[in-house]
Amino acid sequence: MTLGTVLLLLFCILICGYYYLRHHYAYWIVRGVPELRPRLFVGNLGGLLSMRSSPADFIGEMYNHPDAQDKPFVGIHVFYKPALLLRDPELIKRIMIKDFAKFSNRYSNSDYRGDPLGSQNIFFLKNPAWKEVRLKLSPFFTSNRLKNMFPLIDEVGRNLDAYLRQQPLHNERMRCFDLEAKELCALFTTDVIATVAYGIQANSFTHPNGEFRRHGRAVFQFSLKRAAEFTLVFFLPQLVPYFGFKVVPAESAKFLRDTISYVMAEREKSQKTRNDLIDLLIDFKRSTQQSKFVFDGDILVAQAVLFFTAGFESSSSTMAFAMYELAKHPEVQQRLRAEIKQALIASGGCVNQQLIESLEYMQMILQEVLRMYPPLPFLDRECTSDEGYSLAPFHKFCVPKGMPVYIPAYALHMDPQYYPQPRQFQPERFSSSNRKQHIPYTYMPFGLGPHGCIGERYGYLQAKVGLVYVLRNHLVTTSERTPRRMKLDAKAIILQAEGGINLRLVRDPLGV
Image (cartoon, rainbow, N blue to C red):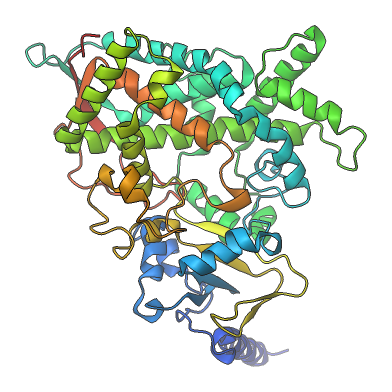
């Protein structure tokens, strides 16, 4: 073949490819479904890939797009694949709860073979294995279990208080020192999850670069490569194996697998019980040996890894964002510290579970923080019904099996029709009387329906204990490095502050 013939052939292939994609991207127009106009190759993900804004803000831009206004849902393209973006709370209720059986899987996934610890945990696991694993893990979060683990959480809380009181003052006259709040809170939650779930003392306050903290940091430290990995996991999971991407990096996976497998083996050998996650996983392993699902090895370790990564990251982010908002709103912090002081007086200065559960204003604060800063800014599902799923009466379109569906949690939280003045921090939104006025299915920081976060109550408990011990002897204020307005990291699909959350703590004991 001559050079001219080769060039002509390539030109023809390009032209054919171009018109094929043009036809492919007409998917929603042909079906009469309102859409957000896609671009070739990237679909509607151009804003996400350019990193001009955070993933949370990007999803919000699609939700608030002029072509999406007043629509219950719109068609989008995640790269080449047609998908749906839901906007109407009633439709969200149908898909997430009422008709969950037809959307029982997340669309997102990692590589089953190359990343077993990332793909086989209950977050990514598919039905019917997901259902059995979740059923077996649920007892870890019963009221009785939370009561038994409270002394362990409280012990780490006391270590947090001691750590803060030992910090050298940067200004003796003002009795204050500066710190990065997210890292402080991650030290606390790493120690909590290590002792509560595994029976291990991570000692993060004395060894901030110890192995547990270092590997936990590696999972959620969003470099450009990590951003690419998570983007494919959530939007194009079919390609994850070809790129060798992982939710849990290889070095961290090895450390966590070796550690958890060793602890489980030692526990089985000694036959001692501690009523922690390791005991639960051992019971799980024994109870499923005769079932059609064999749960052993990595699938057990994967659940322990998820409890560690999700357990420390989501709670530490919530605590850190709460400290930021308290620093920016001293009147709210003053009222919260007064509530903590009264509770401590009533308990004789002892932090116990009854005290934590009595802190109604703190609960309101955390709920408002989670409205403004939900750990995951969107939820995803995949249609699993062989017959498809009719969207009537919203539209005649029938969702085909395998189509991804996205629920813009952050955008709903920031919609002024549901939460007036959404960018203002107002804990009173979640008072007992105001909560009754909320439109159902517009608030989902822990997800919704059967796939909702299994550890919601544990997460609240952990965050409350940590904040009590921070505020018991310290006042949180802003510093010269504190951003006036929070800017979210454009690389992080899991909500994170760009540049960290730098704050100042003033030594100011409550005197109880």
